Amino acid sequence: MTDHMTALLELAREAAAPEGLTSKGLTARFGRPEAADPSAGQVWRARWEEDSLLVLVLGVRGAQVEVAPITIEPTGQDDRSVVVSAEATAFGVDTTAWCGLRGELPFRVLDRVVDEWSAEITRCVVDQAPSATSVRRGRRVPEDEEVRYDIAATMDRLGCVPAFAVPRPDGPPLRDLRKVVSLPLAAIRECLGVSQSEAMDIMRARKPLAADQVQLLADRAGVTAASIDECLPGLPALEIDEVEHPRWRGLLAYLARTNGRTEADTRLRVAHGAFALAARQSGQGDGGAGLWRQRIQRYLDAELPAGAPGDY
Picture 1 (spheres, rainbow, N blue to C red):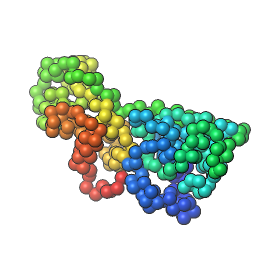
Picture 2 (spheres, helix red, strand yellow):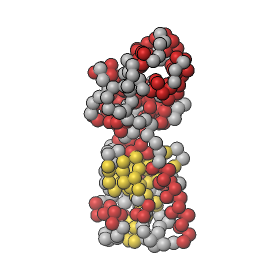
Picture 3 (spheres, rainbow, N blue to C red):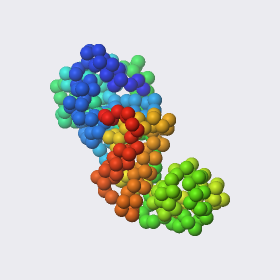
Picture 4 (tube, rainbow, N blue to C red):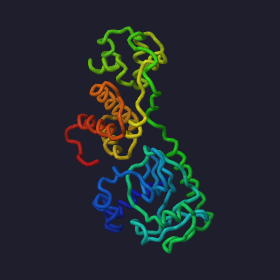
């Protein structure tokens, strides 16, 4: 899907688009645009790998948002869409909300907020009815069928982006890792490339392991990967939700580029690091959403390389 937001920001840099779409304008309106809490009426850029799409948030449920994709005229419309006039949004051009392509997206694909529509206009999109003076009903245009198909396919791909980790079940690990892996700490350190304190955290079930690490340890110890999985803690659901909040995307993307890793791998590494930090400080990796936010920030403060940009 064409990244309409990128094109609009290019126009903004050339002073052909409203000030509200420039970096300065977005900061003035939203603070850090990527750090906003998603809420109904906001327009976000949803992005993952090669897919990018503007979406209007219609509702929030946990770490999921119900959205309607939007496109900037003249990029198409159909008879289930509504078209918002240029003066009613920050885009400065007519904007199509594809009401018939509504769906749910996870927080993990939200990139930054770029506009906020009035409750009246948002209600028009929810009801698929042009009840506001600045909104009209779309019309079915045969040549726009390909655009509609492209948007629907992009929505499907963005909606299927998997979480970087599965929440742990309640309760302690099923087995004691020290009874399954009979290796000295030095061998575990060498096998996994970790420090002595990290190796101790692993053996004490204070630190989760990535799948490739589990397999490395299983091969070295001569046991199955499944037997090791039974001994390891998973990541708490609240921590997973917090790491996937858009507020961390800029920083995680920067760290991923710096380290030559994927964004998903970087999220997992940061979550593991924050979990281990929490376990060392409190003896358990529990806590509310606010505590996880603080722990992740502390871990990232230590991870941030010298010379990194200060604003994400």
